[in-house]
Image 1: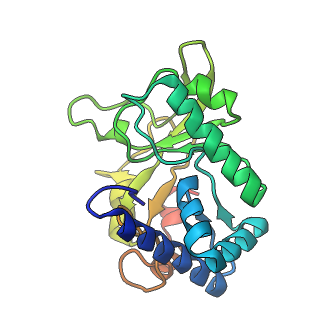
Image 2: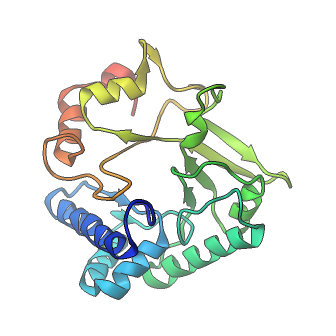
Image 3: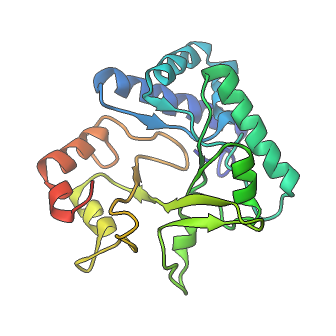
Length: 238
């Protein structure tokens, strides 16, 4: 969910409501369905503007099916801001999820930011965050980054576990093949470290997340792809 991009603030607030209400609907229909939401600020919007929906989210968090696990108040820029600013991002984000959900984030979810401060591992560790998930280092068009799961050490030697997940992936066989296999070869860089890759699917940017329909982006389509097409077995992925 892009908080600010091609729409005004009021539209973003409605996008949040539609996206998270859709997840409640999917959880009602599919008992195995789970969802992760990154920005505490978006939960604050729902709390203030859609209190009934917020109560439903709280119930799903208590069940362990809805994870408010992003670590920060909002997915933030990490190039220009100072260290104090980034500390406050984690402090405010963790404070909100602890007070409202009884939940402490252990992951920093930042797929849509270009550039990362070398101070982040130290700041993350100081705020109780152990994992970092991002994507855009792998978007380089010149030098391919050699790893996708690794320990990132900061200026002071603090280390956090990093994974480059994949985004903008539709849950259909062709998209899965393109993202898991490259010209017949496995896309995972270091299979001795991990033989798994996290793939995020559903509608992003303007929100929506996974939907129910069998078309591209739908949760039902994802079930069919993995259960009927046998990609779990064929590609050796969990």
